[in-house]
Image (tube, rainbow, N blue to C red; front, side, top):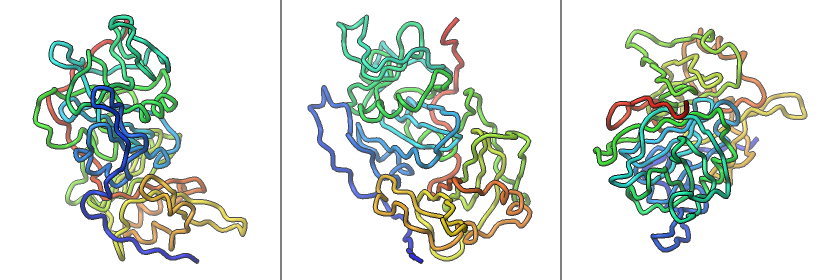
Length: 334
């Protein structure tokens, strides 16, 4: 059996090499930055993004835009699968904050207001034309109110969302950008409401509430920085436990459980950005055998661990506080 040792991730991952267009026309990197950079999102250069859809293959999608940090996070089944630099509305054309639903999708849209300007992969949020779309990314707000994304990311996001997808825009342009809105787990539900998750108390080893989401796709997140294991079902957190990872740190990886022809099960590594060479390599043992956790919590999650189960192992924190101003809920349609 293949055995692989993982070293802890230290500092920013290797720099991403991309071809850049002139700044006025630049629409970002053509490929994803390494998965490890997702935990250092503020270090992403203008136009860079991280895209790891394998971390959560199914479930409701939510997009969270933070104007203070000029970043957008994409969550599926409550797990962050992407993060990107953006450019929002410049002074006099500020991007509205609020909770929106996608009203229209048009891959080849052109502006009806601004000289027929191309707006590739438009996802319209308001009746007056505010949208997510590919556009210039100079490193500061420069749009007429829309949220500009890297072209490659806008294309991927366009095929990932639906008309039921919620987009939350929060924060304030120009506010101190100290940390990225949200963490590995979405700060909002699929409807845009705050999740209201309360951290475990000092005397609370775990929490298990499967009734909050009786069915739907399941995702596991194991955070080496928080020493927490979180379980989400249909985008809702149903369990959280204090854990300890035995042996060497696991680093940042995506694992999936497969059933082998011999009839037994095996965890294998998923080849994601920055770890493409690991694709389909078997993990040394059951990933959960490396994790010390309360026995009752282990028994509760056992029935959910079936072939196809995905585990995101990360050094990023599970949750983070929001930045900038408070959220104002606006109506995006009558």
